[in-house]
Image (cartoon, rainbow, N blue to C red; front, top):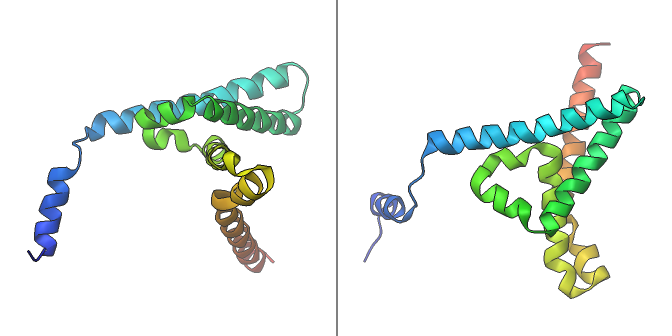
Length: 146
């Protein structure tokens, strides 16, 4: 049996689970917003305790990364992501989840050859392309604002 692109498209449509985009997008928006709101609450609380905005922002990032890693380790982040989808990809918590889940999956292979070698499976490309993009944008900014 030869599979044509049209037949393949029909087979994919039939096999794919039906999703309610309006509900999924709304839930992703609400969960992502809740994560951001939590960050703002932490930031405001730290500022209320006397930290300046820069220090409070740093501690807020550290706390969100730590909470995300703990939730990943307990399996809560995966359950939340199953329902919230892209809403859990809020940059700092999503990145922390990606790093933590790589470490958790590789722990059976040992701390050096497992966790140490595979923890950057996700982080490596993000760091590489993030730094590259920042360099290019910085150069463009410098050239147009000199």
